[in-house]
Length: 184
Image (cartoon, rainbow, N blue to C red; front, side):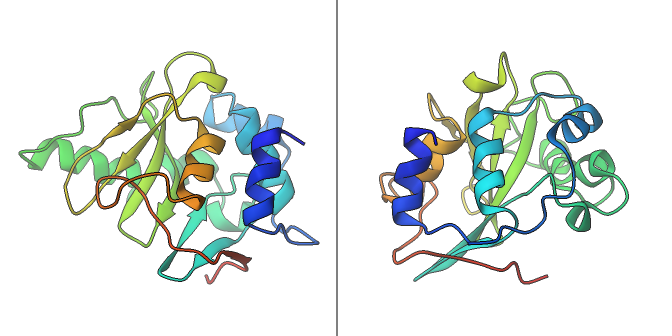
């Protein structure tokens, strides 16, 4: 197990039987047209589908391997009507605080991978190799997209769990934490 994943597991106990692992990673990556970060794939393999419940809210790390979450097509779920990238495009076109990055499926675009308490989201900035993708936090209240420079998927999640980001500018959850079934 990756050391950072071990540190996450000490704060957030993994389920004994992770759910939503029907799709193979090569099929997922082929469909979305991107190789995903190894730390994200290891997290999903360990936790499956669910949510991080906390004292003050929740976070959902999207499980791209779970066919029941994305319906018939993962790429359509990530880029169809009413998807988060489409919302970002509307923010770009209708706001005085436009998204400063390209948006998936454009090359180097923001690819969402998590929601925090319904209004904020975490995204990868898909520039360069997947292991070097930085996380971009969409902060709804501030209508901005701060880049968490140098923070990979697992480093960002660990910082959230350890409360190392300053709220409200950055994602935050209050302990204790529990990984629970996703309320669909």
